Structures are given as structure tokens and as C-alpha cells.
Length: 455
Image 1 (tube, rainbow, N blue to C red):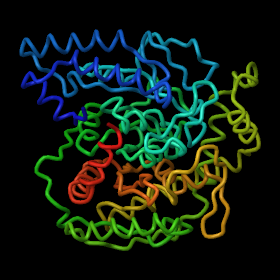
Image 2: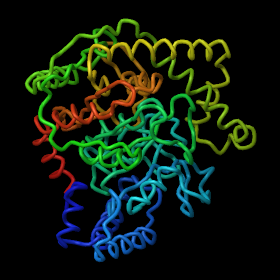
Image 3: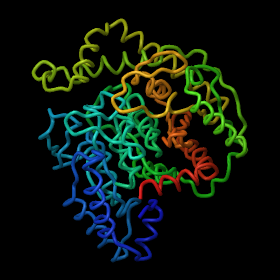
Image 4: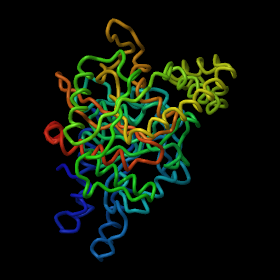
């Protein structure tokens, strides 16, 4: 059974099934698949059925309120849930039970959502994969030998494998968009501060964002509307006539895998077919993006975990300990220089959107990598996997511009690729318009293949 949020709501309305029946189906599917996938750290079966029965009573009484009434969702395990284990993917917090919900949880529960569980992740979101020595590595549902991406990999894998209808993740350098691309789903990093981070374990105050992961553009828009109160719609959207699509001249087309490049060029042609005007935009000012993102993020995470580092550094994973070692080497000069560069890039990227509505890039220079891979080679050049996977995404954490990853096909071995769409601050509506038009035109067969794969 594979449904969109809209189809689910219609089914409730027409009495085809009930929230309790839907919840039972999802819980049973999670129990069946999660032992191998490790996409959930905890499954909230009791709470899910309580919320399902509450939604059922409202539907039966005709009291249908809330944009997500009876919709089964999940949260990355760094997002606080009252009375429910919240580990942030670390053994250090293996017994941590928050006394209140994160603000996003309160908002979605107010709209009638059903909590299925908490998703696995890289420890404290320190990495761009979802390898986890404590709760198991998240498995990509397309190929068990490939990474699901991270750090919100459990969320993306759960959506792809139909273990929930949507999930809320966090994104500090690409941690929503990268796993969405790896798992063939839609992931949105909204405008900085548009979605509340209150009640979430921070990684970097200047770079952290929270946003939805879902199976398609419409579901993503529905969840975003619930999170923000802003009415996003895909109804009545038709093509891209009159829309200006920006193609970057530099950086986003450099040192890129041949197959990704070909698929990107094909996506550009699809945009033209849909009526968009293609405009080249100058991105020659971009250099050392990953280095600036790393300076900001790594220095701040050292402060976030300062007290724990002093008392319990031995309990962190090896990868986390290496991150803390790097944080100590970053000088105040380097950090202030990165902040200065951030201010410049916010201005320069915003200026791009004076000439275009949306800019498009690949989500990553490569397709998803093999598990345990630490280094990749493109065009004879070696690069760490982490740096490579965030090369195209991390800029928009620095500048705070909204960026969305949408599938744009499969590689020859059958691994998904992601297309990244970027707009000016607070113009998520343009991302949904462009993404929806592209999805309707180019992704019908991809979604059919995903449905068959995830049966």
C-alpha cells in the first residue's frame, strides 16, 4: 500500500480505511523491515495507536480539523519528543527522555499527525552518512551496499521504503537534501529560521535548519504549510511558462561525475520543454565553500559539546572525537573570516535572484557512494566523501537560502540522483512550483519504479 497524503485523507473521508488500520499497517511494516534497515531507533507503537484512535474519533464525528489528521510521520532522533527516548544517535543519550516536545512536534501533533517513531542518524549529526556504531548503519532501500546519506538518513530511508508518509529532519550542510537524493525522495531545507529549531539538539547555530522529507512535492508542501502556517499549494500549477531558471557558470559544474552531468543536462532540457527561460548566472565568486562551512560548523560544535567533551569524550564515536580535535584547531581569526565570507555570500547569492526565480544544480557531484567509503575519485582527483557530498549543498546553509532536492533519475546501476532547486529567502513557493512542474513532466516513471522497488 503506497499512498500520498492527499490520497490518505481522501481514503479517510470515503471510509476506505481508518487511521487505526493505517497505523497498524505501518507499524507492522516497520517491525518487518527495520531490523535490517536500521532506519528507526525507536518505534512509538503505543503512542501511535493512541493518536490514531483520537484521529478516528474526530473523523467519525465529522470533526475533521488539522492538515495532517491521521497522517503517520516520524522525526529525526535529535528532535525532542515528550516522554519518548531521544538519543541524537549517540550512546551518551541512550536514556535521555525529554520532558517536552520540540516546537515542530507540537505543531504537527496539533494538526493531527501520528508519530510512528524516531529515526536513526549519524551521531549528533556530525557526518554526511548515517553510519552509526551504536544503533546500526542506515541501509539505503535501493541498494543495501550504498549509503543512505546523512545525517538525516534514517528519515529519508524510512520515507523511501514507505515506513512513514513524511519525516522531519535537520540540515547543517546538506543533511536533508543529501539523504533525500541518495534515497530518491524529496527533501527541503527551508529559509534560515523559517522553521523553529527549538527543542532540537544543535550542531551549528549559524548553519542548522529543520525541514520536511516526503515522497513527492505535494506532500512536502503540505507538511511545510503545517510547520509555517504559510499556504503553499500545488493546485493549478501548470508548467514553467514565464519562470526564469538560473544555471550557474562556475563551481556547481566543476569536478562532477559524468553520469550526474548528463542527467543534469537532461533536467535542464526538461525545464526548457516546460516553458522556462534559461539564464546563466555568475557564480565565479564561489571558492572554498566546504572549507568555510567546515570552519563555521566544526568550531561551533566544539562549543555545543564543550562540557561533555571534558567529562565523557571517551563515550563518543571515533568520528565524533576526530571532529572535536579539528574544532580545537580553528582559530578565532579563521572563524571571524568565515563569518565575513558568509555575509558576502548572502549578498551575492541574493543578487542572483534579481535576475532569476530559481537556480538549479545537481544535489551532489556524485551518485551515492558505497558503504564505508571514505574517499572518492572524480576526473583523477581525490576528495574525501564528506567534502564531496556537501560540495553543492553547504553554500545554502551558509547563506540561508531555501534549497530543495528532488529525484531526477537513476544511474545505470539503479541508484537515485537528486536535482537541487534554490530560491531567494522565503520563496519556498517558487521551489514547489518548479519542483511540481518537473515532477509531473519527468518523474512519473521514476515514481512507478520506486513504488515497485519498495513493495
